Image (cartoon, rainbow, N blue to C red; front, top):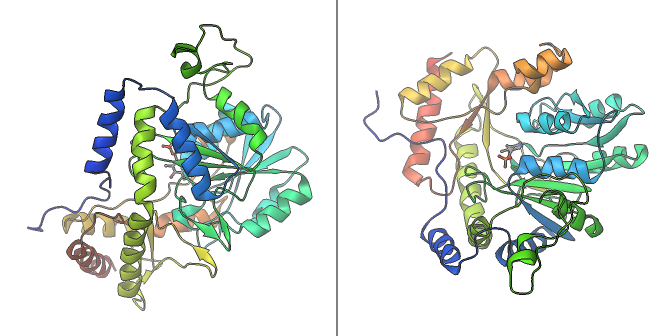
Length: 383
Ligand SMILES: *Cc1c(COP(=O)(O)O)cnc(C)c1O
């Protein structure tokens, strides 16, 4: 149908500088966790205003290790939004704790504080908000609920590096915040993650949990001053970051303001093009937040067949995605916890109507215009 080249849903923003940093790190002779990882942790902590940061192999690992660091396990309940990526619920199950799903807000797809309040029981220990698309959740409300009931806030900030809620940077708000550096994320190292903590005294334990529960890391064992001796002091994970990833991460962190400016520019253009279109509802940004624009989630009016629009976009040479298939629609979670369609109506309605358009720094202006034209045409054709 389209003679123009296909516009991929995502293309990583890593370039020559990142390639050089990775090559230089490999030539240095040190590959795994070491000084580069420490440098990245410090630079990241300072960028998000966090007292401490511990680098991990993924956001998923960071979430699970945060739960472990707060001793969350069997008998404990963790409140998770129904509209999120599977790992939010999976890490809770891996800890032997119980995920409790709650519905999200139609306005911005984030966890509904009223639903959180209703879901609290004497067993609740943690609320795990997800800053959907890069827009912070209602953190004031969630912080009050957590304080009232003595709960921990562990934030899934996979989309939200760069985001701010009022004057507070995401990463400095809740007890712990997990970031993702997966290939498609705003700051990408291929695979990788970061756990920030507002209580810096927990950082050593989180770091140890990320490396087998071992008393010394490789740097402390294999360098000239090192010793082979170590002790396994608790049951840990293998979730440390490599210095190669950290070298790439340092370049990406330096380039983040420039990459974010381009994301904001593209999002503004989409908003302008879709405003006033009766078939489409562009994302709404709350007053006083800085949106990280990881995703551009467009909502279709009820009655339009979303999958037909996706097919229409594909036919017009535009890649898209959907965020997210609700947790309770997945076979494993449904069978294990007995959740049924109909239980989280807002999440289900948003899932049925949402599509995510290409949004990344490397998207050229003429591609943005093609995405807009294709979206308008595909939505009209599906009505
Ligand atoms: C990408 C993503 C994750 C997982 O990140 P990894 O680094 O791949 O583990 C978790 N939660 C959300 C909301 C995500 O989008």
